Image 1: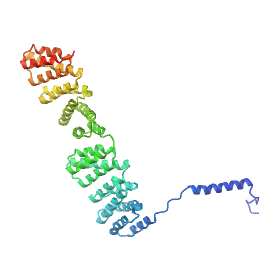
Image 2: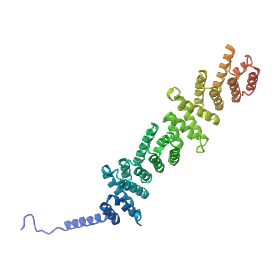
Image 3: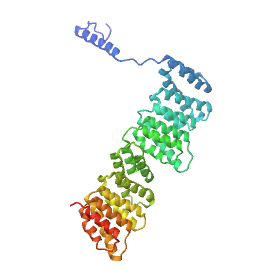
Image 4: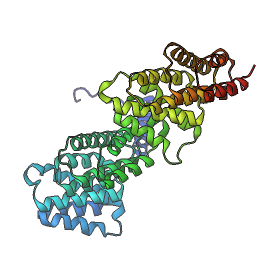
Length: 410
C-alpha cells in the first residue's frame, strides 16, 4: 500500500460536496466574461503601422480613415499613433513626417470623438510645440475632451498663460490661441468663464475677440453670476468690462441688470481709496449709478447714499466735474426713499448755509437739488425749502422752491 493512501472509498457526503464545488466552478466560469478578443482589423492596421517607415505611417492612417468600418477602430488606432509620436518626440519632434503624423492622428481622434484618448492628446500638445500639431490637438480636444475636468483645467491654464504673455507684449501664436478658445467653447465647462473673459479684454485682434465672445456664449452655467464674480474679484479693467458686457445687448432683463449694477456700485465704493486704478474704479462707479438711477433700483438705496457723499467730497475737492455730482443727486431722487430725501434735504441746508455766510452758491446745482426734492415729495425737505424764501437767492430759485414746497406730501 502506498504511503498516505488509505484505499477507502469516498463517503456520499464528500462526493456531493465535490460535485457542488465542480458545478459552482462551471457557473462562475460562465458568469465571468472573458476579455473581448482584439479587433482583427485594428490589429492588422497596428501591425502595418509598426512595419512602415515614418513617412508611410501617416498614409496608413489616411487609408484607415477611408475604411468602411473606420468608426469602430479609428479612435484607438489614432491613439496608438499618438503614443508612438510621444515616444519619439525628443528625437523626431522636429521631423516634418513626424509632425504630419501627429497632426493627422490628433485630427482623426477628434473626428472619432474618442474621449479615452484625451490624455494622450494633451501629452502630445505638451511635447510638440509646432503650430500645426498644436492646432490639430486643440481642435480634437474640443470633442475628445468633453466631460473631462482635467482637460478643461489644462486648457484654461494654457490660455491664461498666453493672455499674460500677450499683455506683456511677448509673441504668441494666434492660431493656437484661437483654437484653444474654440476648444473651451466646445467643452462648455463653466470653469472657463474667467479666462475667456480675460481673453476678451486683453486687446487681441478682432478675430480672437470674436472667438472669445462666441465661446463665452457657448458656456454652461449662470452667465449673470459669472459677470458678478468678475466684478467682485477680477482686475479693475475686467470689472468695468464685465459691467459693460452685462449692460449691452438683450441677454439680461431689468432685474438682472439691476443686480449687476448694484454689485458694481458696491465693489467700486469699496475701492475708492485705490489710487492705482482710480480711472477704472470711478468709471465703474459712475456708470453703475446712472444705470441704477434709470432703473430706479431702490434696492441699492444705502449704496447710492454712500456714493452721494463720496461724489460730494470729490466735487468739493475738484476731482470730478459738476456733472458727476448732478448724477449723484439724480440717483438719490430715483431711490425715492425717506433716507435719500433726508440726505438731499441736508444738502439743501448746506447750500443755504453757504449763501447765508458768504453769498456764494452754484445755481445749476441748487436748482437740481430743489427740483429733485420736489419730485421726491418728502416732507423732510420742508424747512430747508421754506428757508430759501428768506435768503438772497434770485427769484427763479425762490419760485422753484415754492413749487417744490407745493409738491410735498403730508
